[in-house]
Length: 134
Image (cartoon, rainbow, N blue to C red; front, side):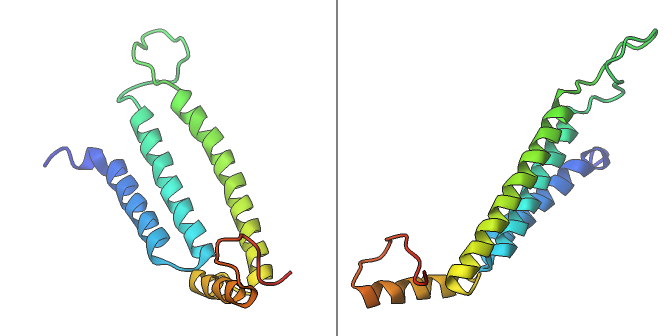
């Protein structure tokens, strides 16, 4: 039981990961799904940074008396991943705005219903990829 406080970051990462996954699979709103994906992504960042920390490790700068160094590579990779994640979220939100313009809703059920109604009206069998409003 004495090791639990040392695993605090991992428990937070697991909780955020499961919360984000739950939001993605339980919500029909596309914006809420993007928020869930961002939560999931944040949990991966926390997990990866937690694994990259060496106990009693110092910055990799040569100094007298320092023998244990932490590797800065995981932190640098996470900085890059944060930038990519923000850009991906922005693209996702732009797609949601475009879907809202085309279908008038960001709810999955309403979008699917309108798409099916448009397919029946035009005699298509579905999956055409075209929006009902042009």
